[in-house]
Image 1 (cartoon, rainbow, N blue to C red):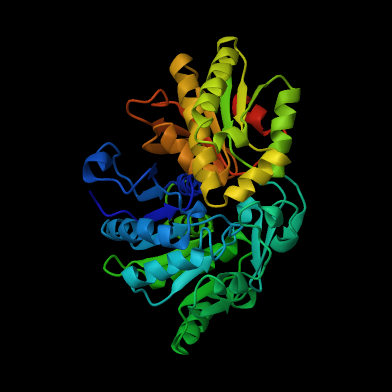
Image 2 (image 1 turned 90 degrees about the vertical axis):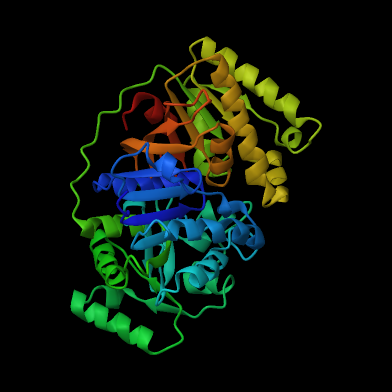
Length: 444
């Protein structure tokens, strides 16, 4: 197999499909796997130009992250790509104790030994912007919501596990790593390419700089950054980077691939949704869907955290979901919305993604074993990777864009009812109020 242009590791499944979408839209053939793929598994996918791994590190402690990432990064490096990317959410959800982006950078720096680690959090197409090192985000991806500084964002600043209380990404990262972080600010990004490169080389020549954070507000800024990154990347010495899907958007733009010809997304008769999201955006979407004819199966978070009650609760919910599906209804299975259940999820900290996500996936799998349907949606960044694994998914490939950051994909899931199904992974911030109807109808 020819070496890919890019290999990436996503810290959750929803974010990984976001990166997959950005590559596919720019004509880069990519597939996303549940773990670093073997040569045998890669043989099922012809002419891949990018290879992704959907991980679970967003909800892990730093030590657990290191145990997961060290072998994964080595396997990705062995693929021979010029660029290896640690994909995180553009809202930089992380903390010194959970999902530490700094620890990921520390581990990668030992393995890749590149001149520096580029960090790009901006993703303009998703409403994420970095200016003078400070991160801003629109309320709701794919909407016209207001743009807020992260530490004042009505949802991101109140995340139950990793609330963003610091919008200055240098300050945020400095709590997670001791590496020296330099800012390549917007004024430098706006320089002509040759002058921008000279500024970056001057920054690195000063010595002691390990990480360079890039500002960006537009797609044009991403192209400048991509050219700077490409200058430092080789197959023998791949450049490791960390950040949002803005990195995929940027690199694909300069590789000059043929633009993706989107397929028409046909409506589905009914859909099955599994949500472990605590986001108020998702809560509003669930409320809208239930009000407009979707059946609701609410999981008890208190029961799921109890080993004695968990199996019974999963069985109850699966039977209820299957009953609604057999009646021709679309169904939303969800854990937390707001209130007491959300407080329980917060108390679980790094275990919440594992316990709640695995439960959601188990409910979906058992329901699908009883009723075959065309399309499934999984909502929630922290829980998505665990739900995907419980559902038996091994890999996904994009079929068509649907809403920004959450494409329609085909699942590869041997010995699972999810095999060859259409599936969408949605982050908590993605979409407007009628999002689940868009998933069902294929029309925004």
